[in-house]
Length: 119
Image (cartoon, rainbow, N blue to C red):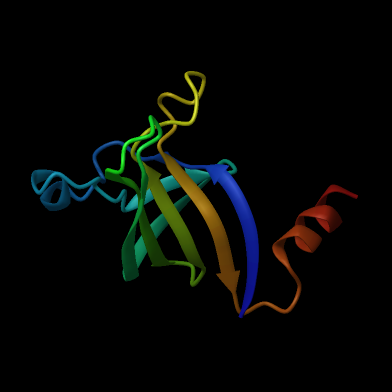
């Protein structure tokens, strides 16, 4: 399995969020999303976890920072995506869903593929 670090925003397709999770106060994982102008469909959630961090204003309190999901898409790619509870900046205020990494069984990395495609 080849894993590529991505760290790019994804755009959830409207109406595809997990509403049951949202009813529990968690982010609704989008079952369809757009990345690099291509739509992906989540076929299976393989794993999920949460990331906490200390208060940024100096108190000893811990806050939930990110919700992570390892998913398998309909095309066979495995993706690690996360929901950022608080945006890093005002410019990214609406950007909450991020693609962290992509894993695939192909021997050539995705970046090599995209570089060949542009030449």
